[in-house]
Length: 324
Image 1 (tube, rainbow, N blue to C red):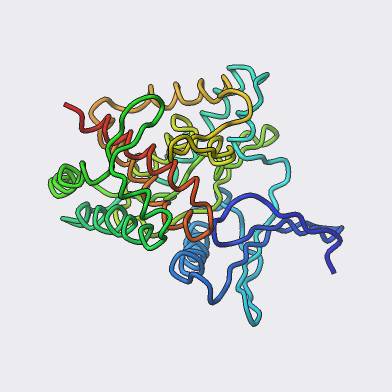
Image 2 (cartoon, rainbow, N blue to C red):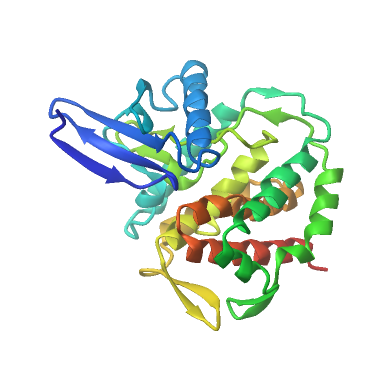
């Protein structure tokens, strides 16, 4: 019998719980066997299999799977509890963090990410177009099944951060052409969702452990992982995801608690400085598509206001990428 259960952050359609048995702690990730299977159970299961593979290929870089089971309504797996580890997003929210501490975290993070990307293989010719079809067009279609999002999507033109932003239909042709013509030199083993919230760091061990990998990426390129880092460090996903959404003339605005912390800005500067200039446009476009990819998850979980806001942010990023 568990002494205490604490609900943790993370997972739109699954729940993550810290279970304290007194003499040990575990982390349990649970999902419904029946509700929203495509974006719930299927994603949960693919993550389980990816964790199993990483545990063998990259021991110590991901938490160990302790148990897998199910009951009449739910499936779950248990992971080892990471003592002395906190997610990097939370660590970088501490404004008192010194620059050398940020650089220490950054070095450990990049070392871990490079270890994942070390395995490479020949790319699938033409796969980027499938990525566009599945992760952009299909995700928009799925989000539009929710009436409130569909009505917002059909507005077509928006005001965001004091500027006019056009909806994604303005960029579909350019996006489709871009991914049709995109030729990757290689693909790599990737995390699939290495946001700062999905990366744990320990000052005691001076290393990172990644959590919540994502399998359904269509193209496994390190640039996709880079885009998701920027989703956190540059677009401040975790901060805005916790913000309160209010509306002005149907336009969603997010109110956050405080300001963007300087340690996060420094981490972002370090990461962007390491990106090669010839790779930046691809990474920028992929960052925009990550905000599209999440829309059905947000809608299915009942977070429609945040889905609308992140849709606007994606459109702003695409406008920056394809502006003349």
